[in-house]
Length: 111
Length: 109
Image 1: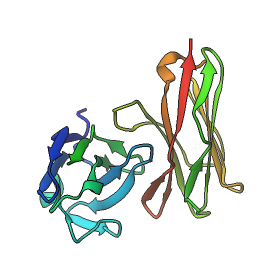
Image 2 (image 1 turned 45 degrees about the vertical axis):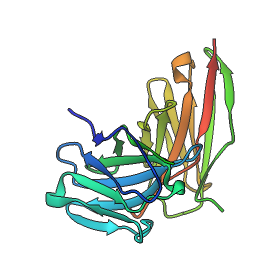
Image 3 (image 1 turned 45 degrees about the horizontal axis):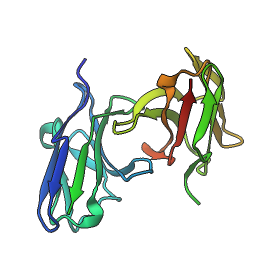
Image 4 (image 1 turned 180 degrees about the vertical axis):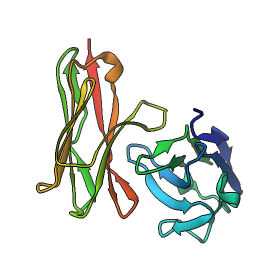
């Protein structure tokens, strides 16, 4: 069974530029999560989707972050414009029940 | 107060010894508890989950849960160098997973 797929794996951009991350969850998993992980910390939830619906986006900085999950499968997370403090690893996870499985992540560096 | 707290590391254990990792959580209504292993530069990998009070064993790993004390632990028996990683405790409440900062374990040969 294929795991969670994310791309790109690494991204370096200048501040104020836009950036987008893509995620393909495990087949059959209806729930999809985006997390941000800073160095030395655990992942922090940004947004949770149940199928196409964003059911928890309370931690998503909506002034610059947006996300979508068209057709309830793939998802895209966007940052526009990026700030220096956005440098982190962005993780996508999916679940079919309670257990969540993570993709490899995208390491974002904002210069 | 952080929602999930883990014992501060790093934790260094000799090969073959038992590594003991502890985690406490603040939300008494938490329902599910998970341990993830994260190698440097990699993403978290689920290694154990526990839902009921007591012990749950899987190979060399044992998770222990005490909801009354709001405490969950992970024991790694017969520690191997390949167990060297950061271990993240995660607690689920209302479908939201909250993570601790992790405890880094180093198994020395």
